[in-house]
Image 1 (cartoon, helix red, strand yellow):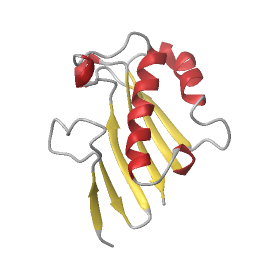
Image 2 (cartoon, one colour; image 1 turned 180 degrees about the vertical axis):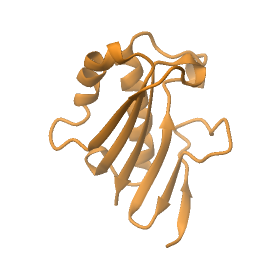
Image 3 (cartoon, rainbow, N blue to C red; image 1 turned 90 degrees about the vertical axis):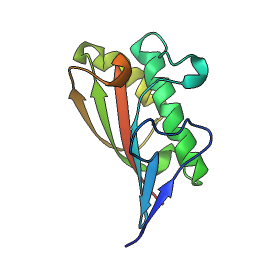
Image 4 (cartoon, rainbow, N blue to C red; image 1 turned 90 degrees about the horizontal axis):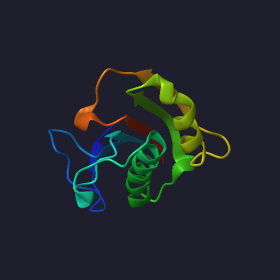
Length: 126
């Protein structure tokens, strides 16, 4: 099975030695996205809900570049800096998956790049 590097010009280039996403067979592996947007001065929005929306919009841009959408996501992994944000995060996340949500893991972590509150990685199917 071959692999193809996937990038969209709708997002900034990765800041390190990783790809925005990689296609392998009929799966698209989307690297962890954080809510920092260089176009907005590199600062994340305030609040877990706004940060979750920004991350999911970034994931959406990668999906759309491949002709996919949120319904094609089969698995996400969520990293939260504060598990106390879990319910508010869920409220924002649920708007992107109104029915048949993907499998998901949610892990509490001590720190994330840029001192943001959330990072999400995803796997989608073509």
